[in-house]
Length: 587
Image 1 (cartoon, helix red, strand yellow):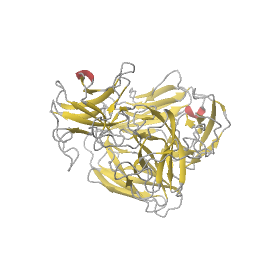
Image 2 (tube, helix red, strand yellow; image 1 turned 90 degrees about the horizontal axis):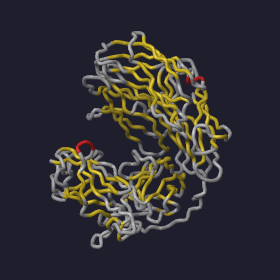
Image 3 (cartoon, rainbow, N blue to C red; image 1 turned 135 degrees about the vertical axis):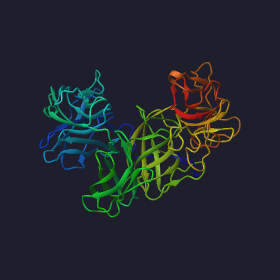
Image 4 (tube, one colour; image 1 turned 60 degrees about the vertical axis):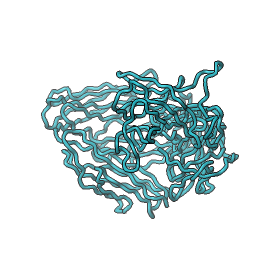
């Protein structure tokens, strides 16, 4: 949950010359390229990702920039689309995979697609991953492992195993009338009674009109009853500007096998011998890594982090790709404008609401330490950075190098809005987001699945004791306790509250719009529980803006009789929409 500190300032509408509602908008049919596993010494052919214009005007694209030498990029001439029905005309982005010199292993590169200055939602990044030398994995008896790839056409598959077992197959993920790329996975499933050992097989793919899709893929399955270490993430990709503060990240180890998996020694190496990458073990059981641009010149740098363990696959290594760029204008991520509760996870339309508390993610949004607004009304500029929504300066909660939290102005027109960050008088790129009247989202507490909810009885969190650590009182609630559920994006209120205006703290409070006969009812209910154990519905005693806040809502409701003990899901439901579910503990 965001830190609630505020800075007083007036909301100032600013005209912005480069704001173009009738601008081209970059769209990519897909942003990942994972071809069929390739034999050592072969190339992956020329893969194609189609780009098209979802806006107006003409879409002009520059040659994509590759982070690795084995991807050669080019832009083809516009033509009729072949992999999407969203547009009639597409521009093919061509990636020649010159992989013949790569040794056996898995390699990942990135391709940045950019356009002219007026192109909205640019740049975007395409990730390209190739597996060289077939499939070689550890698997526990009775479990499964999958290796995914995608093709340009549907495949026929002929699996075979040396032992005659039926542990190898090819499966397709997702099909339909408008399927233009074909996601497959090589599926390994040793039976529970299969003895430890190394088993060999092969998978012959055929039938695609794209020759590199048709391969004989050697498969090695190593069945073990020991622990199997899997780093998460299994590779690290990061980018920082010169002068940026070091970036701290972590790599955890998950056990895909049996037994325990304590973490061992952690080390970092760089191919150039530089000290920009450091790593150490953390008492909590994961590897702490730091990437520091320091005095590095702009360019791509590679390294790796090794983590020792008692797993059958011993020390595992996560490759690291680090790009250093020159200090320049702020850069917002495509689809980087998201709600401040679940950060767009699971959203299919990337929508936010008028008056919503949202975040824009990107890079170079601010240099220096994170800066907050200490009070309300909120500032529309923090440390020389500001956010423009359709050219209007938005109230800001805080600003940092990679994230700014702000309020969507209430005056924003419904539909596609354009968001741009300015910093030190440098205008960043423009990204789009859909603005609607209501996108209900419940806030989470402390990075857990438990809600940002207070029990009115003692202001505790209705969650297990001690789950949030020192300083946060938590314990299970009881039937009859009144909960205050904090949320965002719940929609219009009566009386209406303007942009950057603190919600009234006395009657008339800013309640959610009621249900006059001439309009659809929008009053919410609260669902406790779900699924086979049933749902108990409760009517809130209050649902509206949280007094004294900007953009924050609260729903007050008593836990109804019949709610079971234990962990219970809570959802706020409107006739036209429903929030995400959070958890509470009940005793």
